[in-house]
Length: 167
Image 1 (cartoon, rainbow, N blue to C red):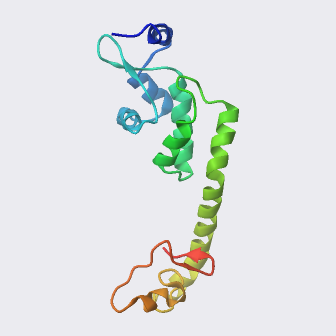
Image 2 (cartoon, rainbow, N blue to C red; image 1 turned 180 degrees about the vertical axis):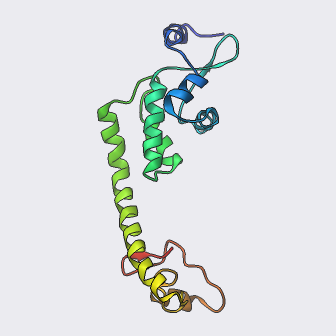
């Protein structure tokens, strides 16, 4: 049974309710994407009397924020944590977006730096074509793997040489 606290909110939301198909079409995503976002706690819906999902209009802005954050490489877990700081059933504002984007800016700048270094080193790699395990600045910068023993070694993101990580 619904409490008296949720009933007025539910009645008000019903007037602006969007079906899962409506949200998918307006956001340019598949219905399955919305279901996935919902299982990850990124968006929320309720079921109407016919057991169909319904969304409030604020979900349109939330999905837009999710898509933008994903395009910049922010993991869904971080997006979920950021969206959890926003009140439910309220469209994220410009101030909310500024606050959220500030959280992701440093990580994005670091990814840009790493990708730029990778791009610049890739030209040399294509030129020589050797992929030398002892000299290749992409796969084994500074021959870090040589110190880890014989046989195949894999350089993880925690190994740093000259301020860059190997891929």
